[in-house]
Length: 449
Figure 1 (cartoon, rainbow, N blue to C red):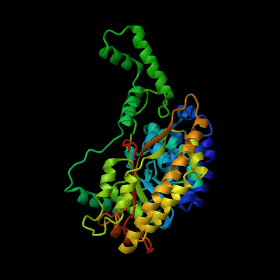
Figure 2 (figure 1 turned 180 degrees about the vertical axis):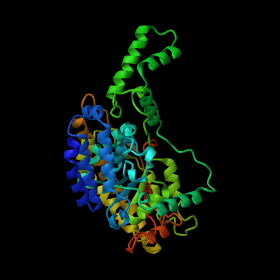
Figure 3 (figure 1 turned 45 degrees about the vertical axis):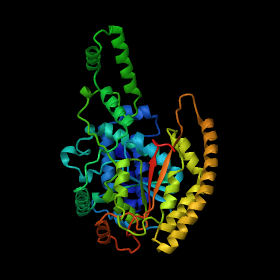
């Protein structure tokens, strides 16, 4: 009844949301209302219903109808540091990687972390089969809830995949990817091992108790009844604590849809970056290698920025790691690392527009000289952040600062996938979209200088 009573209000939200920002804010407001997110999360996940899930996806379908002209909503290229995340989109990892890069850029662009029911076949559609989307929807609304203050402030923006509204574009990027990969040896895609372990553990937690006890006895035939009981009790407690499980076991619920997302493929990612003046960043090595592979291999000016990019490679950067969302947001809200963001912003502005080689060489030298001072100032800021982190810490909160590399890709001719420029030109009337992407960033927490 409450969903029906508030449906008119959500329709008003849909009708009044014409810009990308308005649609982001409408999504937040509707999600909070549909799932009553002002309650403790345990209450939200234990009471999530098929009616709520259907209402949520009906709202998504209305907010992003097939007639949407997304390309006209995207912001024009400007001097802001706007970064598109191309990496693992599972909530635990994606939120973590937003936090890690949030102090190094002005705005992070994320592909919508939910499916648009307008492009899903009826037999799989969440509007038709909401109970099958319960666990997937839990992850989605948890994700939206964590990002809410960032979206409200404009630090993060959700955008749909442009292919959702343009089948020819979707097919076009698929064909370009097929052409690019045709003669490329298969690469093992790096996946966070801890995440895969967590996913398998979560799956096991949904098994009914009698199955768990049987498997324990099969694996440990000498275990006593008391030992088996304790392990089974522990698994049930873990299921109750898991933020993305409702407490039900798989024998008591329909088959659940599961999705693994990385935002977009490289071609669509480059399309978005060139259309809205963003640069891609990733923490996935195979994706970084894909991006590097789009440089012009025989560009005589490609080494101009090498002294600067090599200098970045020699430095150890710090990143927020496993900190609370509130702490990460407070650091960004307080303007921490603004000095280093300003430095990166100047680089971004300099490479945007592709200066001629003579000027680029001078700029590269100047930026390399300036890097030492900007980096030392950033180190002093990180020391202050470390102190602030101690004030936020609680006995049950694990988190801190991780060290790693912030690799900068700055090919003189930019990054460009053959054919993407033509796809953009056929769809964008304005003339100021980028012909290539001048910069990219790779965050490698595993490697230490």
